[in-house]
Image 1 (cartoon, rainbow, N blue to C red):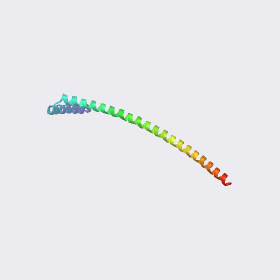
Image 2: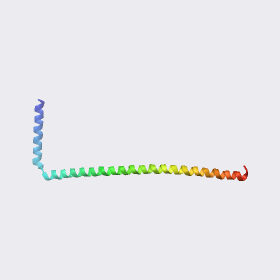
Image 3: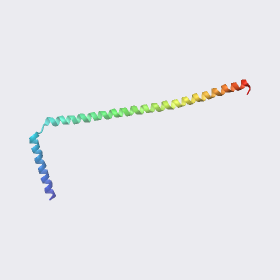
Image 4: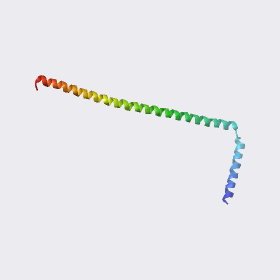
Length: 101
């Protein structure tokens, strides 16, 4: 009984497809154009994926350079602070020696 229902449904769908084809008519040119559109969209998606990959690599490079610059800045700041403290202690030491403290 189920096989009979499926067979009847397939027959009805086939009849409907044939009726619609007689109304519209299959156009092989339209199918070819649609296929070319699909291929063009696929190619555009592939190009976009490559562009995304390039931007990710550039972003990674910039993040690496930024981390290096921050590390160098912290090192340089620490060097300046150490030298400034050393200079300050020398200056205050000279003042103390002059004033006799």
